[in-house]
Image 1: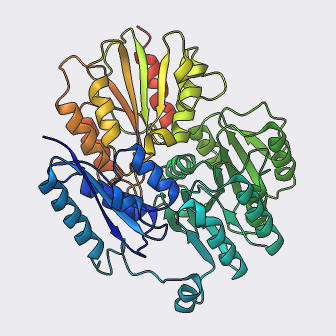
Image 2: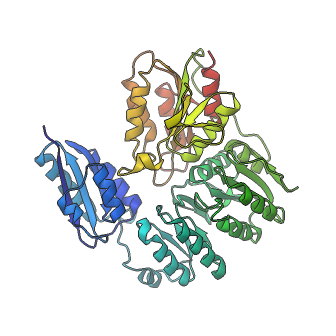
Image 3: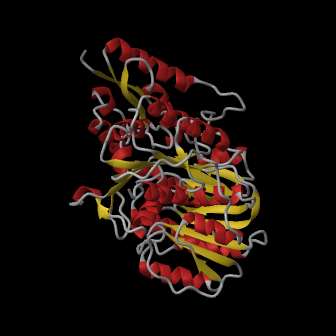
Length: 494
């Protein structure tokens, strides 16, 4: 049957990207639907839809303030039914306990009139418009969290300089995680309050450290995401430095943890000089970063789990019980990751064990996946731009990873398959079940699957339930992402 692409356009209709990703996932699961996307009709998004083969003439004619409902289906009847279902989902009026699509104010000033005590604005609009909305929020005296990505680097620098001049904090752009005053924002976990503060140019890095601290009985004062580019040479750690100032003024914080994927060396020197003046004890976890001359009040951590231990001042617990280990087998390790920082950490663990590693998001010492000449372990960041263009992030929709996992389970060259499962607000409601379904259809002699679960008992998915589902499916569990990578190395030494 010939595939049909159809679009419906909602004029002047806006929903934030997280809500649209959830709706896209739901529509894509309908009978006869091959692919689906709900996106604001910005030029960049229309290009993404065109590349995915999901746009027609109606969608091309839509304006930047319009919403495109796009489906590709097995025939016109299925396409029409999917568009009707998408329209019905858009009209859904949630109850007070389900506010994912609740009414939103049409402007920042209208929102402030309804909530005059607000002190932070979360910006989740297409990247072309995010900077303008952030400036409005700063001018209204608000701190700003910019969830949006695809914001030009020059705009990020200008916004953060404006924030510094105004005494306001700018989190992001591309800030996916924060916990402010005990309130989790975007992709974050429900963790107890405590005296450990986190600063991260790393969303899943913040999640992993905060959850490990929570599991060990500790708590978080605040977790401030600063955006993935904050420690670049161009941005110069503007938000990181501002966050250190805030934590120094916070009597509830006694220990500070800084987390990042590889930062610029000259920026590291600036940050270390600043934390040397901090009243707090500090732990620095710059994954794949340069050698550091630390001040007396700081310690270095090579992994996220080591950072959690340093902040707590004690070792982490052994973690979940797991099935007996199979005998080691010859072959390579394949990591299928939804968290970019977790993928980076796994590469570092494998490299430290003397293994050759290739990745689409390579850390220092690893090869670029596209140019790797010799056989090497492969760590794939499925949240990278090349995999999320026109589709939801794998933390929301694990469909792409499911497909890759199914193929990997039949690959005789693999010794181990390595996975991360990231729970929390905004994430898939039951990622362990998705893995279990794929494993149920795997060949009898498939490579062992090793995983870790980033999350807490208070998360909507409930960490212990996810672990139980994985164990029942035969997955080998480790207490941390670094522990899972280390277990994968042990099993691939045959």
